Image 1 (cartoon, one colour):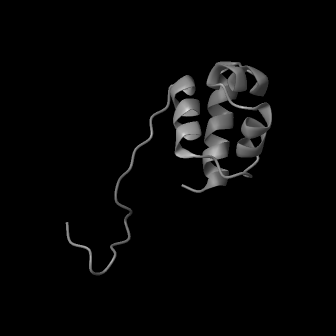
Image 2 (cartoon, one colour):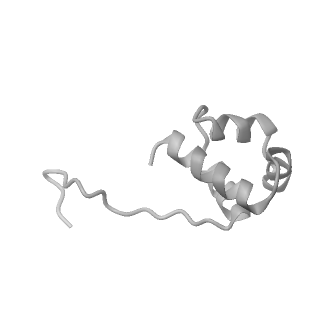
Length: 75
């Protein structure tokens, strides 16, 4: 998932919850411009910020292997 896809997912979830960007920023203790930038596919949020936003929006972060197999890596 790239930053644009992440931002879109956050925006859709935020809107379905009926909260504003300002509300989300306050709930996550991040700057309003951080939410705005992320939702527009800009910025470079830290994992900590992504985690806080995800938690407030009731989303979880999942790390799994991609469908593309890398050579030289054994499982």
